[in-house]
Image (tube, rainbow over the protein chains, first blue to last red):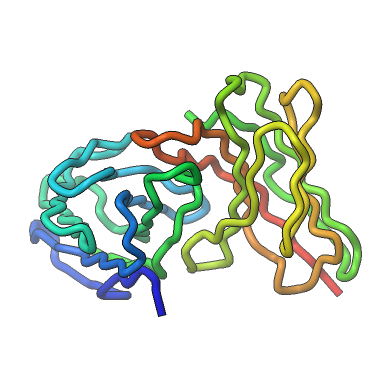
Length: 114
Length: 111
């Protein structure tokens, strides 16, 4: 079945360590997105990519990095520069056609920094 | 900042219609209204979107006022499984822009 796969679902790391969250999609979507969600809050945009080898910063990109070497993959690295990395991270994808607001989301990765 | 205003919470009895309002008074002519919902600890799910005409699909109906400054999402027969956070988002339907989520409305459906 087509969809978006995020891994790992749960991740624990020590302070100061870099962490990479995986996001893979087999929907043949051009655009991919990373959002962060804190308890009781809405989603905040970290980075997004409209096409391979190109990406743009969202509202809260500081302390994060991404790459888009393949259409299917958009990994997110949470670096040690991110002051408060404990959160729920959501990856999404969409087409680049007329319905670009129809995002398909993964199940999320919950990162806890100890 | 999100361009929409939604009530933080609403209650609905099972089997009744749930009407979720959204204000978007600064919406531009090329911006669509999108609705998503998020069940606890899952990724958001697309529900419906529209530009100026009312829209209906298997999940819900979207009513947009004539001046496009507000809209209402209608779940015609709410069930317990419809308990979720509902997000109303406005966005131009073009490449290069991303959805910006606000805090949404927490809908609680009870029996």
